[in-house]
Structure formats: structure tokens, C-alpha cells
Length: 247
Image (cartoon, rainbow, N blue to C red; front, side):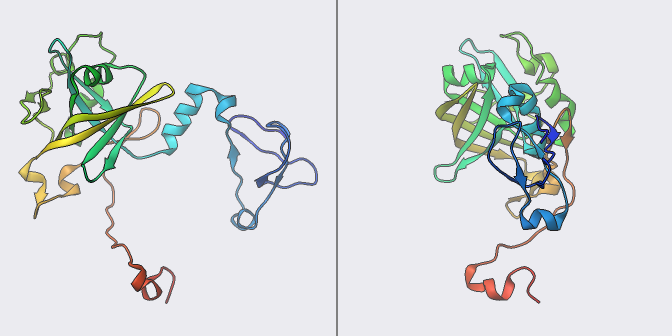
């Protein structure tokens, strides 16, 4: 079988594609499971160790999509305001309310939260697309992206880092903890205050079609809101009557 990073796994004589069999990375034999035979498609094999950091990073970010963007504002120990987008971002806990973002490498956002213990997650809307991208520029340490890019700011209610004035949502956070993972650091922040533009609220709910969030995809691609579907979760007590495919 011929195999390698990003190359089809071609079966040796007498075998077919599918489940990994014995052998090294270059000679594994494959046997197709029933569902693969039914679908009639071939998968491509990727080995993170064989590919190396950057090629697999590019692959990973092209398949883990769409990724919401935390536009993180921080302040350095000497008072310089920093602003940078981070697309490795999500909710980590409900009670207490904790959000998390990941700094790949030691960037100013990470240094500042380690020094000061505070940050603001600003929402990344479509209307600020070019400014969000510009704040990802690798400005020298000590340069404020707010000033360099011309992003308007406003004072936060509970923390020192400013909020982005044009962002419809701002989550003011104090650092809960950090976790080092390889060449990255996950920052967990306890939300101490949330500020939301009344224009995006409908009956107390932030309406997605008014928020118009941006998301990161692979390569230099960005995503916007497409079709929105609404479907309530099925309780187990109702499963027999509601399960998909039952008619």
C-alpha cells in the first residue's frame, strides 16, 4: 500500500480500503467496514507526527470549523492596551461562568493576562471585519492595536482593559487559571460582567441575525451567518414518539 501525509491509502493486492490493520505507517493493510462499502467513498490518511506541526495545524483549522472569535482586549503592566483576535475560543463552565481562549505561542494577550489577571472578550461582528483582521498583525511588543488600527474603545465596568466600543457584546473577565499544553496556553476567565447592545436583544435574548458574528475557517477564510435552523432537544421520555426517521 502507498500511504503518506495527505495521500490516499492505496490497498495492497488482495485488500480493500477501510479499517487499519497491522504494519507500519507506510505498509498498513486496510479492510473496508460495511458502512464504508455502502457509502462507496475513500478516506485520506493523515499522520500528525509525519506531517509536522505547521501542515497539520493548517489541516486541523480547516476541519474544526466554524470557530467563534474572541476579540481579546488586555492591558500590559505599564498600561498599554492590546487587542487581538483568538479563534480557539469557547464557553468552559456555566457556574461559575467561565470562558476560555487559547494563545498559540507567547503573545501579548497571554503576557498581559498573566501580569494583570484581567481581560475582555469582545464580540467580533461582520461590520468590523477588516479591523478585526488588522489587529492580528504582528505589531512590535508595546504597540497598542487600538491606536495602530484605529479601533474605538470605551471603559469597562469591572476590569481595567477597555471594551471595543463597536462590539455588540463584551464579556469582562478575571483570570481563573491557565493551562499549558505543548506550545499553547489555555486561558480560563471568570466572567464578572457582561455588556450587550440593546439593539441585538429580543426579549432578553441576543438574536443571531442581529449579532451577525464572524467565524474563522481554514486558510485566510472567514465565515458569516448562513441559514439558521431551530430544533428543540428531544427528551428521552418523548423519544419513541419523536425519534428521527419514525413515521
